[in-house]
Amino acid sequence: MPELVSKRVEKLSKEVKFHPSIVQRLTFWFGYVKAREMLFSLKTPTSWYPIRVNTLLTTAEELIQILENIGVTAKRHDFLSDILLIPVEGPFRLPSYEKKVVAYKTAAEGVMRGANLYLTGVREVKDVKKGDNVEIVDKFGQKVAVGKAVIDLSTLEKNPPKNVVAVEVEQSLYHIPMLRETNPWNEGLFYQQTIPSAVTVHILDPQPGEKILDMCAAPGGKTTHIAQLTKGKARIVAVDHSNRKVTRIKKTLTRLKVRNVKVLRTDARTLPERIGEAKFDKILLDPPCTALGIRPKLFDGLREKDVIMSARYQRGFIKAAIKLLKPGGYLVYSTCTLDPDENELNLKFAMEHYGDLELIEQKFYLGSRGLPLLPVSNKLQRFYPDEHDTPGYFISLLQKKK
Image (cartoon, rainbow, N blue to C red):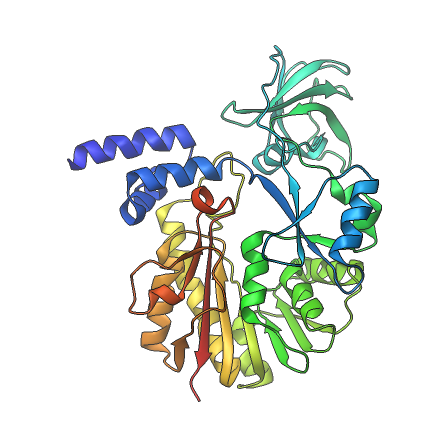
């Protein structure tokens, strides 16, 4: 039987183009059938493209009309009043062309949803001239779009210029409106945010007058969501560790016209030493993770050792969060990954080693309950790509004991 399972895992790994050690882990935790369904779901976009209405500047009804005026259809989410859903079209059958342009992973995943291929996203190309019809593929040959070369691609520069379109996409595997090129985007009327991410902030339940920390805040989606739910009347601190990430947060704040956020550039694990303990009423901790739940993924080179290292790294953030939280305060710990080591088992470790934490029932559940790996796992919330038509995601709500 172990040999049979191993062969099945190896075959599935080749099919989905995920590392065998990750396929084996998912099979161990969820069973082969469930693991297979999740992995194939991860390779596709969700059926709906969710955006969050910036209620500081507009309403859902107004934004629906504004989008309709530029040819974009949207509807309100059945439960989340600040979320609009835009239909994702596809998958489409793509024509075949002899010439191919190989795109880097991130570029290919954007192209498969309708974006043009920029020169910086070209990984490999051979004898493609301006005007040639080409297929755009990833390094495994998975076709994501077809289009026309708009520049000569016979040779590639070592450091290609940015913002130069190499291939204009004429038909992609899926299609999502390019909303970042529209006036509503530029005016800050919405933010692209997944359903589980929006649920996470609602579970935090931020209130006016509270002092709230977003520990790993870039690019600022959850930070600005906290600001709008508190109508700009909370004291919010957003933290990330690099200049690049802090710049992204500030750009998001500026575009969405959010002003009541203090941005700090530091490793959030060092905050207790820098600013002192028991400072915040609520903390949102969405730490760096393996991002196994993000979709679409054409392939993933993640390995088991990466999961283990990531889980250990996250514990430092949890430990700091407990110190920073006031007695009686609330901590939301969330990740965009599926593996229990980064989720249930990290909470189990924290509660056993750091103490002072109690898992709390969340005010609503749009996903499933947690895996039975700790006594109160039914208070946790999980989103599965195959079940909920969302990215894979994990949400927990904890209270620091008084």
